[in-house]
Amino acid sequence: MSKFYITTPIYYASGQPHIGHAYTTVAADVLARYHRLIGDNVFFLTGMDEHGLKIQQKAEEQKKTPQEFVDEIAESFKLAWEKLNIKYDNFIRTVDEKHVEGVKEVITKLFEAGYIEKGKYEALYCVGCEQYKTRSELVEGKCPDHLTEPELKFEEAYLFKMSKFKNQILDIIKNDKVRIKPDSRKNEIISFLEREGLNDIAFSRLKKNVYWGIDLPFDGDHTTYVWADAFLNYLTGLGWPQDKEKYEQFWPPNVQLMAKDIFRVHATIWLSMLLAMKEELPQEMFVHGYFTSGGQKMSKSIGNVINPLELVDKYGADFVRYILLKEMVFGSDGDLTLGRIAEKYEADFAKGLGNFSSRVLKMIEKYSDSIIPQDEKQDRPILDSKRDFSENNEAFWALYEQNLSGYAYNLVLSHSVFNLAISENDKYIEQTKPWEIAKSGNEKKLFAVLYYLAESLRQITIAIYPFMPETANKIREQLGIKKIDENNFDFYNEIKWGGLKPGTKIGKIEALFPRIEN
Ligand code: MSP
Image (cartoon, rainbow, N blue to C red; front, side, top):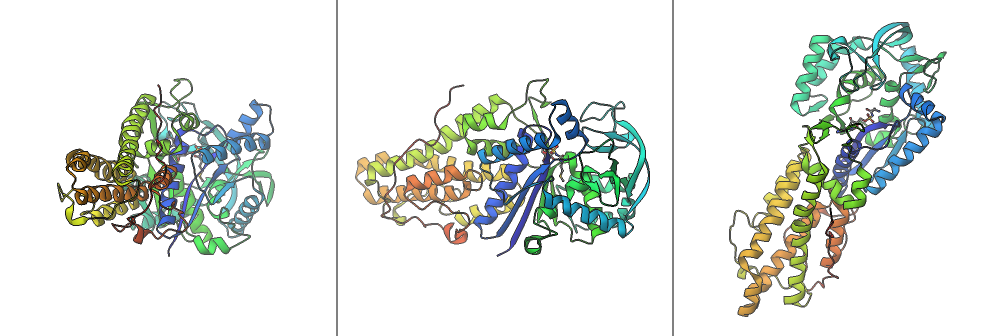
């Protein structure tokens, strides 16, 4: 049994959950569920980033205390994850007392070791990003993400000596000591480091400006820079430094997921912090793309924001999980519109998976008295041995695993699940015409075909489980077999062809996906 520690970014508690937050979190949940399924010991961490100027300002605008403000937003995120069936192991909040203690401990150690020193800092700062910007990153003097002009800050600050780590980080990334995926991101960060190098960075803010932050333990006039605070969540989320049990079991992360917006800070600030702390580095960072809607950035003013909760209310959690991962190549940008979503629900869920499942079950009901028949292998027509699910089962699962561990979610769904497992078997029904075999009275052939289809459906439930856990178990109930318990599942045995026992009585057949009026 291996351990598998996966993290998402911790999201700013400055606004409601967005489809982009849902995307990363669902992607992480799918991998976490898959790893539990294959028997790994999994820790899946997500949570909230709750300090800093942006949140302080938003709370002030709404005449709330920052604490009240972040408490409300954290609840909305928790609710969103509950509705989307996200099974995290911890939901870390940077206002948690233990996290705050952990941050103070690290900052003190870095200060004592000489990695943090008092100085003066002058730089352009974008509050929207809570990040410093170089002039070359600006477009017409503005932050390209927030379309605002960054403020020029010149103040006393404690500086983190990040410049020391440039060569080490280059070596680490070039030699895959931390694997950066996809390769294009690796090349991009290497050329950035070679071109621009690394500057020291302010790790504190004057408390009179940013009071909503963690006090610097050694200087009461300052609070900790929000990113220095936030990165440490990946450690404190395991209970570290107070309780080392989970840390010893799970550190370092097997993979850290994030979008391209925050990759550079992870590759520079976060890795430098770990090097200064002499902690082991994450094994991999996977950087995915950005969702737009109708070709444009989702924004309230354009009115094209897709709210993940409204989608769940309309289509159910499994479909939302599916559409996010199916529509976008993980690692590239993608686009989603409400029209496309409605289309895919109809085609892939109502007509595709829903229809296939009910067709198979109804034939078992009608032609075999609701009992899974004997598998009369030798009597089954094999129409195309290259695409026959039973003949190619091992290859199917090998490809499934290969694609999933390479984060090719869209390929797993479109190719393995919907093409090979569902469409091909639907064609098999069309071509073998079980209703005609029934008329001809060839019971052995009929049973052979029915068994093959029912076993295919059982296999599909395993393949879709990490993506659509509710649907997988609904189908299993209708097939009359045990629901999947991901913490207790003999995966490699279960995926062997032929696991469905003849004689099993199927359950009540119910529509999986109701038609939805648009
Ligand atoms: N708080 C920081 C992260 C600190 S991690 C130590 C932050 N928060 S955020 O709320 O802005 O979240 C950014 C992340 O949300 C992205 O990296 C990505 O995971 C997700 N997404 C938010 N909008 C997105 C899209 N439109 N498309 C895809 N994912 C995006 O940055």
